[in-house]
Length: 265
Image (cartoon, rainbow, N blue to C red; front, side, top):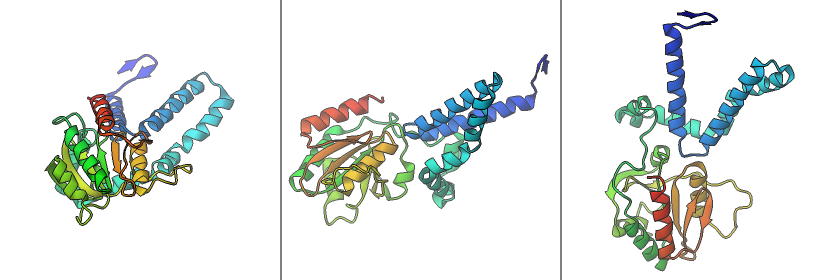
């Protein structure tokens, strides 16, 4: 088709559709993480570059073009850990056996939140404060919008209902599953002994241990919530968006969970 100054063909339509599909898939994979902000940041810069180029501001256009040219390299540096884990998942037997390719065709991994039963907050709170009394260390990650499949794959996968006794048994000091983090998604315990990223904050408080570092790390890179029970003090904390809410009471933990779980539904 020829619309005067614009020529549009079937292949152009296919090209536009595939680019839109790719962008939407990338957004879905990054949804709920800090990567979305960077994703939109690059997008805004690129749109700005197109506008500057169109009105022929040559100096500014030249500067932005240099940035655009190294954009792919910059993305690879910023997201090197996420890209590595994603490529490992694509090349794994688990991806092939569990029809992982269907998830990609459906624009990314299945979202963990809002697709099942309501979170059993009472059982989680009860377990945390029973472990607090015995100073049993624990790290519980609760998925929201972000799918945590890449982190689930680092641990022992299971599919268990949530109960106070089950959580206590998993984190019992002599249990083979007590190391690492437990991940809860869709009101199910989906994995234990999971390895999480730790925060790289230089001013991280020295009195917090590795559980709290991992809690901050996972909530910096995703929208998940992380509950930590200190093995030294028995204090219970809830970490959200990289910020630790420490020394919580059962009532305060229950309130924060209810507020932040329902806010994404």
